[in-house]
Length: 627
Image (cartoon, rainbow, N blue to C red; front, side):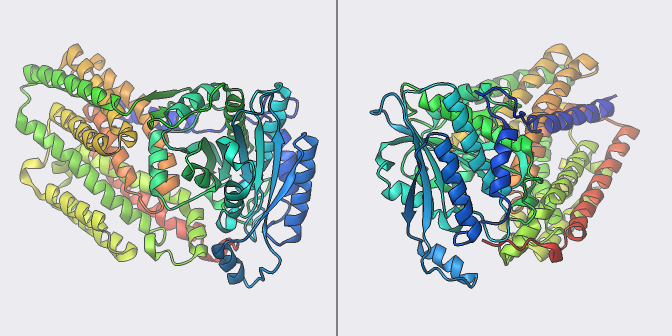
């Protein structure tokens, strides 16, 4: 019974994740004039992305002239702003064997006037240049086309009090030079109060809002309200904002954020093989992605130009969208209260389990160690499976290799995901059933593989030592259902406390999941702490299906963003799911053997998929577009 319920709940979680990570249907050209239409925007994409348009090329000049005409049609009275190339941009051009003589970046700047010229302005921007060798339908013809379509819709909605600056930057692919010229030199720069930027790092998928200005609580409040009207809804969370700040990446919006301006940065990162690729053509572009990014940009920009007061920097919000239906948000300090509530619910569940089943502290300790084992083993196995698909980190020696790996990324995600699921199944089946020494050998071999192909990584090595040690520990072989469940929940809550103390914006992953798991455990204890009835297992099954679906969807975007270098992030997702699903694991009999067999099959299949990536996307077929 429990095995069926476990597999059904996990299948429901996966299905929910797949459904809720789809892009909205593109709106036709006949859509309402006040709404966003991807089909209308595609007309501009098709003109811009006929061929590559790097700075200095004939196609760059033709697209510039075309866009100047389009902006004039929209009543924006466009002007050209020239700016110097930075030393980094000069080096990139000369490294391609080209001359920089006579070259400069040229921004297109237009203004849709507001009724009150004294109010701070809003900037809506995207870049119109591309890398050599790529038509750049996604990066960033889609952004420019979405900007123009959004401006048309804003005009159709009637005049706003606040003026809108439409900024189509140049030289983003070189070193953000166009945006740097605007925010450093343009006469309007001092009047700007908020910025909306559109980008792409792929050719499809839901458009994520992944960057804001500092102290974003008021910005997130406005974004949450505005995107209720957007096709596909909101797609953002505080964890993505936090992680992006730690990365060395930069877009045009980064220059605005560094100047303390409020605003949002939008991008879609699915179909990664199209990034800077000759295959980034209008026909290959996911028009649903264009609909999603354009609709979000339209609604947020419209809300900003009609807002009596623009968002100000206060504190950073803790928030996440829930399946695109809305945005849950609270202040950073609220996390402590939620953690306290989760610990109280866990305590109630432990009290009920002790009275009904005689739960002991030792059993709880075994469950806690099982969660630590899963996290450590998941990190090691994820890294080992990842390196089967190609080099990682500092061993990625060239841009060409990087683009090859991007083409393999979907294979990596499937392979690493299945392998981590196999590790999770091994825990749920019972480590004693599989064998302590066998598990230790598998983890040690994975660590050797990860180090041999991926290089020395202290995190992977440390995780391997922990996982091997816990595998060989005789006292930690198996745990009771309640011991395993409560141990996993407390591990998640401990991680929540640690992250809450250092980075409250990132703690939501642990705080919200831990609270959901603790709530399910408390309900189960109240219904029947022996967990012998379907009704007592229902809270865990529902939590696994719903919260697990949210986690799986989040894990997908996390892997697209950082999975190439940090695949172990999926090991953390596995721990969170176990905190929800632990009581659904079979207690004894053939069902446990079936689960152990599934664990082995998942691990083998995951390795096979990662290896298959080398043959499905060989280096010889790498894109030639190099910035």
